[in-house]
Length: 188
Length: 188
DNA sequence: TATCCCATGTAACGAGTTACATGATTCT
DNA sequence: AGAATCATGTAACTCGTTACATGGGATA
Image 1 (cartoon, rainbow over the protein chains, first blue to last red):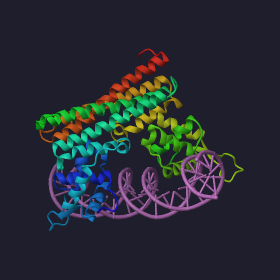
Image 2: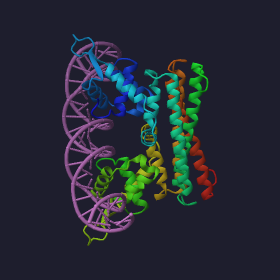
Image 3: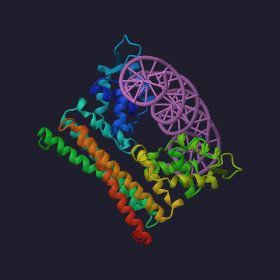
């Protein structure tokens, strides 16, 4: 059992290694060249994180071309690492996470193919949707309690938040439909 | 001149103190009770950050009820602090920031009343909009280059990002109109 | 031969988190 | 009187950032 919960970056790495074994540099390039940049790209964070995962036995490292002076270190996920990853992927969206770590929600979703069945993914998205709906209500209540015309910019900023979550609600609905279509699942 | 650039939390505190002097506890409650939670709420981050700002001369602290054993420490922004804050508020949105620190963009906007004129705020939002449009194009290109039906979840996650930025574009357009209306500014 | 990019890291530093500590004030 | 909450902080820890270091292979 992990002493300390893994960081978002560590879970990201675990997920990427579950999809396929890679070297630290592979991961680095993947981060740098895709929208994953959001989750940080510097070698100074990636290499130590991989080493931490290896130290915990969540990933294994094997030396490519071990005879050469500068071998590549290829990381692959272990059974224990996969278990840890799956436990994380199965975590439903909480209000706390929606507010403080919204990126992690989408990250989990995008890695869902590692172990979740389509119905499980749909359930996850429905949980996400519910949480977003509840939070929009919260924000709306808060906005309506705000004083009238004063603080225009603050009100608009709040409005931005509301619209952002509403957009996420719409997206989750569309994603559920797309997944149902792709797997010919009838609505429950 | 600041040796190290301030963190987002420090700028947030600076902005809140520019609106009115407050104690650390006031700030703490404000964070805990509003959507500002996103920018962290623990006393363990707030008090040290305030102390750092005071150490740099960006805020001044005065003891409330100095005769008592446990006086409240009220922080207020200094002229130098206000200069620093204003320089930050005037920073236009960059692509880098849009991708890595999107919250900071809205934060600056919501504090704009500290010093920016309505036309300046509108210019800021137009810059935000331009950056978002460019990034949506980037993401769209990336999506279209992705392999066809494979990786459904990853494609949907990317779609989420695109829709999120599109929602921000719509918001910024609406916000510009709202500000024009409020100040009876004709379109440039 | 010199210079770039591949590929792997390390070191110093700073900031945020969690958890704890402390004493005053107000409520029950 | 005791409990909760106000109000202020500190300490330990960990992670991420920036910057630097290293050295082989490819390209000019």
